[in-house]
Amino acid sequence: QLSSLAPIGCVQGEVAQSAPLTALALPCDAEIANKGAVALSEALACNTTLETLELQSNRITDRGGFAMAAALLGNTTLKGLILDMNDLEKYSVMALGGALRTNTTLRKLRLGGNPGAHAPEGALYFACALLGCPWHRFMDLDGMLLSEVTALIPDNPPECAKWDNDRYLDHCFHVHYDKMLAFACGL
Image (tube, rainbow, N blue to C red; front, side, top):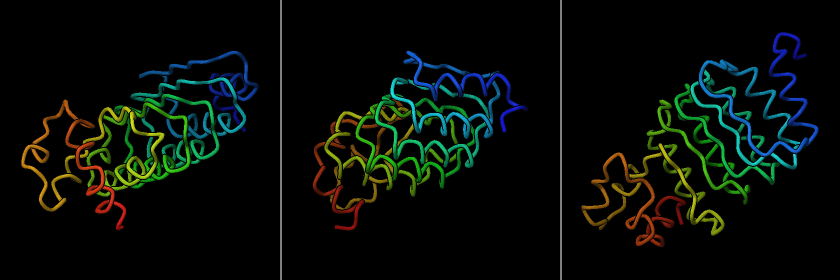
């Protein structure tokens, strides 16, 4: 199955066997693309040691994004997933956001530079997942601009709708917790 991905197959084997591997970085130029992302997500299903997985700039599209979202549903050790500068569209970003409803361990998810990272639909999924789950109160969502959601909330202070690109989860997000939860989750 992984013969065309010999290096990824080796890494997948190490990850699946729960070798004492706590961090794996396959940054740009590794070009693992969707096949590698799918293989790694399958390995995450049985891994009990990997805490950080960095896959930025690897030409991963929705197929790989959906696989990673599925892996997050069952994995209980991964704390950081870096997917910056890939080709994830809004549907895989929404799937990743939806996975946060059940995943209690992930604390860092970086999606900057993906086409779907700023889609309002993706922002709504993340807002609902984060606000409905207290274990994600200190989630680092670098690259996921949530101003699209706060701007839609009635009676929101103007400063919340004017976040700059360096401010994602901040005072406005936490101050308007109840109103945003009701809006984003349809309560």
